[in-house]
Length: 206
Image 1 (spheres, rainbow, N blue to C red):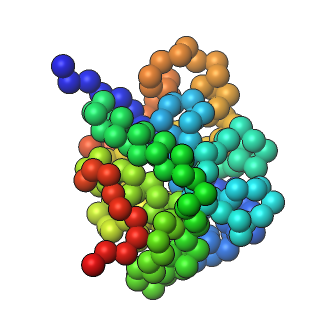
Image 2 (tube, rainbow, N blue to C red; image 1 turned 90 degrees about the vertical axis):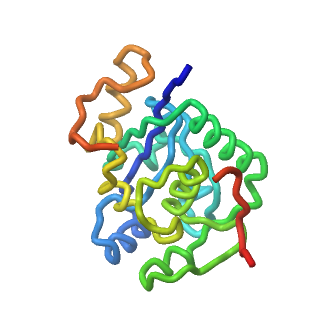
Protein backbone atom coordinates (compact mmCIF):
# COMPACT_ATOMS: atom_id res chain seq x y z
CA UNK A 1 0.00 0.00 0.00
CA UNK A 2 1.33 3.44 -0.91
CA UNK A 3 1.84 5.68 2.11
CA UNK A 4 3.16 9.21 2.49
CA UNK A 5 4.98 11.22 5.12
CA UNK A 6 6.11 14.82 5.43
CA UNK A 7 9.54 16.33 5.70
CA UNK A 8 10.14 19.93 6.64
CA UNK A 9 12.53 22.56 5.31
CA UNK A 10 13.20 25.31 7.83
CA UNK A 11 14.75 28.64 6.88
CA UNK A 12 15.99 30.88 9.68
CA UNK A 13 17.62 34.26 10.12
CA UNK A 14 19.47 34.49 13.41
CA UNK A 15 20.54 38.12 13.11
CA UNK A 16 24.17 37.38 13.96
CA UNK A 17 26.95 39.33 12.25
CA UNK A 18 27.76 36.25 10.16
CA UNK A 19 24.13 35.96 9.06
CA UNK A 20 24.02 39.67 8.26
CA UNK A 21 27.19 39.36 6.20
CA UNK A 22 25.61 36.60 4.11
CA UNK A 23 22.46 38.67 3.79
CA UNK A 24 24.53 41.54 2.39
CA UNK A 25 25.42 39.34 -0.58
CA UNK A 26 22.19 37.34 -0.96
CA UNK A 27 19.70 40.15 -0.22
CA UNK A 28 17.57 37.50 1.52
CA UNK A 29 16.56 37.78 5.19
CA UNK A 30 16.58 34.03 5.93
CA UNK A 31 20.02 32.61 5.24
CA UNK A 32 20.15 29.28 7.02
CA UNK A 33 18.43 26.07 5.84
CA UNK A 34 17.75 22.90 7.82
CA UNK A 35 15.87 19.67 7.20
CA UNK A 36 13.48 18.30 9.83
CA UNK A 37 11.77 14.93 10.08
CA UNK A 38 8.87 15.93 12.33
CA UNK A 39 6.42 18.83 12.42
CA UNK A 40 7.44 19.81 15.96
CA UNK A 41 10.98 20.45 14.69
CA UNK A 42 12.66 18.28 17.29
CA UNK A 43 14.72 16.24 14.85
CA UNK A 44 16.46 18.89 12.76
CA UNK A 45 19.77 18.64 10.90
CA UNK A 46 22.00 21.01 8.99
CA UNK A 47 25.54 22.23 8.52
CA UNK A 48 26.16 25.05 10.92
CA UNK A 49 27.84 26.06 14.15
CA UNK A 50 28.96 23.40 16.55
CA UNK A 51 29.12 26.07 19.25
CA UNK A 52 26.75 29.03 19.31
CA UNK A 53 29.51 31.56 20.03
CA UNK A 54 31.90 30.40 17.29
CA UNK A 55 30.80 30.83 13.65
CA UNK A 56 34.07 29.36 12.36
CA UNK A 57 33.72 25.97 14.07
CA UNK A 58 31.11 24.37 11.85
CA UNK A 59 30.03 21.03 10.52
CA UNK A 60 27.19 18.52 10.52
CA UNK A 61 24.95 19.14 13.52
CA UNK A 62 21.62 18.16 14.99
CA UNK A 63 20.10 21.51 15.83
CA UNK A 64 18.08 22.46 18.89
CA UNK A 65 15.70 25.11 17.61
CA UNK A 66 14.50 25.72 21.16
CA UNK A 67 17.93 26.91 22.27
CA UNK A 68 18.40 30.70 22.72
CA UNK A 69 20.54 30.94 19.57
CA UNK A 70 17.55 30.04 17.37
CA UNK A 71 14.48 30.66 19.49
CA UNK A 72 14.06 34.37 18.70
CA UNK A 73 14.90 33.95 15.01
CA UNK A 74 12.60 34.77 12.15
CA UNK A 75 11.77 31.67 10.16
CA UNK A 76 9.81 30.10 7.34
CA UNK A 77 8.68 26.48 7.48
CA UNK A 78 7.99 24.47 4.32
CA UNK A 79 6.35 21.08 4.03
CA UNK A 80 7.13 18.50 1.38
CA UNK A 81 5.06 15.32 1.12
CA UNK A 82 7.10 12.29 0.12
CA UNK A 83 6.62 8.56 -0.07
CA UNK A 84 7.33 6.53 3.04
CA UNK A 85 10.22 4.90 1.17
CA UNK A 86 11.79 8.26 0.29
CA UNK A 87 11.32 9.50 3.85
CA UNK A 88 13.14 6.47 5.21
CA UNK A 89 15.88 6.78 2.61
CA UNK A 90 16.59 10.40 3.60
CA UNK A 91 16.32 9.71 7.30
CA UNK A 92 18.65 6.73 7.10
CA UNK A 93 21.15 8.74 5.07
CA UNK A 94 21.28 11.55 7.62
CA UNK A 95 21.53 9.12 10.53
CA UNK A 96 24.39 7.32 8.78
CA UNK A 97 26.19 10.63 8.29
CA UNK A 98 25.61 11.50 11.95
CA UNK A 99 27.29 8.27 13.03
CA UNK A 100 30.46 9.63 11.42
CA UNK A 101 29.68 13.25 12.30
CA UNK A 102 33.23 14.47 12.84
CA UNK A 103 34.19 13.50 9.31
CA UNK A 104 32.14 16.35 7.84
CA UNK A 105 33.23 19.98 7.59
CA UNK A 106 31.50 23.27 6.89
CA UNK A 107 32.28 24.35 3.33
CA UNK A 108 32.78 28.09 3.75
CA UNK A 109 34.68 28.26 0.46
CA UNK A 110 31.77 26.55 -1.27
CA UNK A 111 29.43 29.18 0.14
CA UNK A 112 31.64 31.88 -1.33
CA UNK A 113 31.67 29.97 -4.61
CA UNK A 114 27.93 30.63 -5.00
CA UNK A 115 28.72 34.30 -5.52
CA UNK A 116 30.73 33.39 -8.61
CA UNK A 117 28.57 30.40 -9.61
CA UNK A 118 31.46 27.99 -9.39
CA UNK A 119 31.79 24.67 -7.59
CA UNK A 120 34.56 24.79 -5.02
CA UNK A 121 34.86 21.11 -4.19
CA UNK A 122 36.04 19.89 -0.79
CA UNK A 123 35.74 16.30 0.29
CA UNK A 124 33.07 15.71 2.95
CA UNK A 125 32.24 19.41 3.16
CA UNK A 126 28.86 21.16 2.82
CA UNK A 127 27.16 24.41 3.64
CA UNK A 128 23.57 24.36 4.92
CA UNK A 129 21.48 24.56 1.74
CA UNK A 130 23.95 22.37 -0.16
CA UNK A 131 23.41 19.68 2.47
CA UNK A 132 19.60 19.95 2.42
CA UNK A 133 19.47 19.85 -1.38
CA UNK A 134 21.82 16.85 -1.46
CA UNK A 135 19.73 14.87 1.03
CA UNK A 136 16.60 15.57 -1.01
CA UNK A 137 18.33 14.60 -4.24
CA UNK A 138 19.29 11.19 -2.87
CA UNK A 139 15.57 10.42 -2.72
CA UNK A 140 15.07 11.64 -6.26
CA UNK A 141 13.66 15.01 -5.16
CA UNK A 142 14.83 18.22 -6.79
CA UNK A 143 12.70 21.09 -5.49
CA UNK A 144 15.25 23.56 -6.89
CA UNK A 145 16.35 23.35 -10.52
CA UNK A 146 20.02 23.93 -9.78
CA UNK A 147 23.03 21.78 -8.94
CA UNK A 148 23.07 21.12 -5.20
CA UNK A 149 26.27 23.13 -4.71
CA UNK A 150 24.57 26.27 -6.07
CA UNK A 151 21.33 26.04 -4.06
CA UNK A 152 20.73 28.86 -1.58
CA UNK A 153 18.21 28.93 1.29
CA UNK A 154 16.19 31.50 -0.66
CA UNK A 155 15.83 29.02 -3.54
CA UNK A 156 13.73 26.76 -1.34
CA UNK A 157 11.39 29.67 -0.65
CA UNK A 158 10.59 29.89 -4.36
CA UNK A 159 10.18 26.18 -5.03
CA UNK A 160 6.74 25.12 -6.31
CA UNK A 161 7.28 21.69 -4.73
CA UNK A 162 7.40 23.08 -1.20
CA UNK A 163 4.34 24.33 0.65
CA UNK A 164 4.97 27.25 3.00
CA UNK A 165 2.93 26.68 6.14
CA UNK A 166 4.39 29.31 8.45
CA UNK A 167 6.36 32.54 8.27
CA UNK A 168 7.22 34.55 11.36
CA UNK A 169 9.03 34.24 14.71
CA UNK A 170 10.29 30.73 15.30
CA UNK A 171 8.99 30.73 18.86
CA UNK A 172 5.51 31.37 17.46
CA UNK A 173 5.63 28.20 15.40
CA UNK A 174 7.03 26.14 18.27
CA UNK A 175 4.43 27.47 20.72
CA UNK A 176 1.55 26.55 18.42
CA UNK A 177 2.98 23.09 17.82
CA UNK A 178 3.17 22.53 21.58
CA UNK A 179 -0.50 23.40 22.07
CA UNK A 180 -1.86 21.56 19.02
CA UNK A 181 -2.86 17.87 19.12
CA UNK A 182 -0.13 15.45 18.10
CA UNK A 183 -0.49 14.72 14.41
CA UNK A 184 1.74 14.01 11.43
CA UNK A 185 1.01 17.44 9.97
CA UNK A 186 0.78 20.91 11.59
CA UNK A 187 -2.43 22.82 12.20
CA UNK A 188 -1.36 25.97 10.35
CA UNK A 189 -3.38 26.97 7.33
CA UNK A 190 -1.11 27.12 4.27
CA UNK A 191 0.31 30.58 3.70
CA UNK A 192 0.46 29.91 -0.02
CA UNK A 193 -0.97 27.41 -2.46
CA UNK A 194 1.82 25.72 -4.39
CA UNK A 195 2.03 22.58 -6.53
CA UNK A 196 4.17 19.77 -6.17
CA UNK A 197 19.93 8.50 -6.47
CA UNK A 198 20.52 6.38 -3.80
CA UNK A 199 23.42 6.58 -1.33
CA UNK A 200 25.93 9.07 -2.59
CA UNK A 201 29.68 9.41 -2.52
CA UNK A 202 30.84 12.74 -1.14
CA UNK A 203 33.92 14.21 -2.72
CA UNK A 204 35.63 14.46 -6.06
CA UNK A 205 34.58 12.34 -8.98
CA UNK A 206 36.56 11.22 -11.98
